[in-house]
Image (cartoon, rainbow, N blue to C red):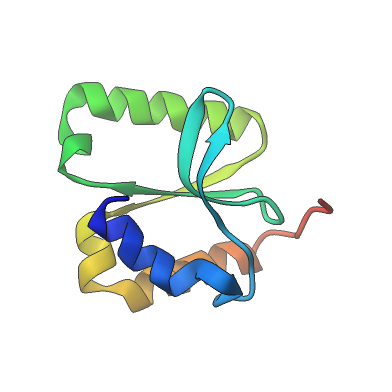
Length: 104
């Protein structure tokens, strides 16, 4: 797991935000960095490799697929994770607060 993912995982594992996340979770033919089935929420972290046009097109395709199956996707850069983790966690909590939980 890349360092940014490890760092975020330290803050969201074991229901630290009050919700359960799974890491490296299969969604169709894709693998989500983090997934919360209760709120149908995917968290993706974007490192330097996501800046190319090809990578951006792939990410857009992934987002569209996930959206079509009813999942919300939040993307953060690695830099956001390392420099402003409190804002990242707040944005995740706001996303959850604005969405109803779905039965498992």
